[in-house]
Amino acid sequence: MPDIDPAALSSRPSANLSTPTLSTKSITVQPPGSIKTTKTSQIIPARIDLEPLYTALKQAIGPEAWVVYKESSTEFLIGRLNQAEYSERIDPILASPNGEKEHLHNQLIAAIYGNVTREMPDQGLAPWVSANDKPTAPVGSKPVSGDAAERRLKGEVMQLPSKDRRRIKDLVGNDLDPHEQLTNAFLDYHRRQPKPAEVPPSAGGIGGINKMNFDLEIRKRFAQPLAVESGEFPDGPLIEGRMLPFCYEAGLTNGHVSDAAHFMTVATETFIKESIAAIFAKTRSNGPGEGGTAGFGAGTQWIQTHKYRRQLAKEEDAALRGDLARDKGGLLPIESKAASERGPLGMADVRIALEMADSGLAQFPIINTAISYGYREAK
Image (tube, rainbow, N blue to C red):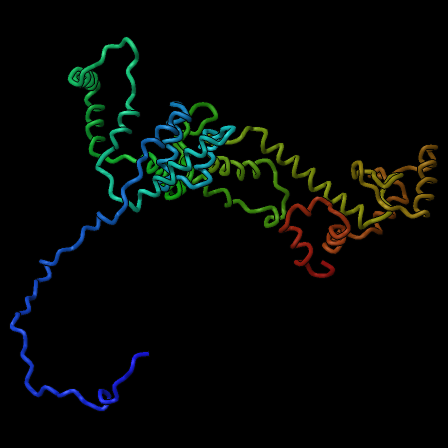
């Protein structure tokens, strides 16, 4: 440790009381524009050379599959394909036993994405891309010069009609996008308002309609009263008058066939009879006939009491022997007595039959609801 002089600690340096002399140098201020800035291009890395990756992948894939691969990759990079659609297209192309094609594909895509953050490329296609993708002329064919090809193309265009030439000239200045046409087709379909079916007037002739206003005829489809309003069973002319406007509305200008109304009448009558027979079988007893099916069709059997069945068997045997005669309706005395004691059919009976099983009316929700909730007791 060095020795310290005690005198040096107690002594103070002499202060200079003279005014300090300032420097005579002038401070120069440079304008902001004169300051030199370093070029940013010096710190941006150079672009990745894609030529070896591009060439190796193209040779591995082959010229036929390269067209599909190049088109799919272009649409994927610009956002027209998602990853699932892009993989569906190129997976069969890149499939290989050792995974070489897939490795080259990954290198190319990674290099393309890596060049996004690097220097801007030159305008246009790279020279090696143009040289490799240029179509080769077949062997033995004479190359066509630019002027000769232009003259031949001009001659072919001049042979077209003037309307087609004018259409081609208009297409030159239009930027046509094939995907836009598909989009417009769907948009036009959704924007199109549904139009009512136009029924062309018939040409006339036998059974035809000549100069008829179909709109007036279509409006008549609900003009006729319903059977529930008139209280009458619909006959052939009434059904025909209701069917014809519906045929015009559906576009059948010649209407319906002549037997359609008759068949509809028979079908309606059969349906109502079967429904009523099913309701009677569920709510009445002691029907006519040995099995209670007389006059009600097959499959409809009434419940019969033992006393009624025994008396009915005796009277049938007596009728066969000639000891007993039937009435004008063909009924035996016991059957006539049971029919006179049987009450009329009411809405309560219809509801009971509907709750027990389907009697043919359950397929109509409106009728089903009206029977279940829209009637009064003893009606």
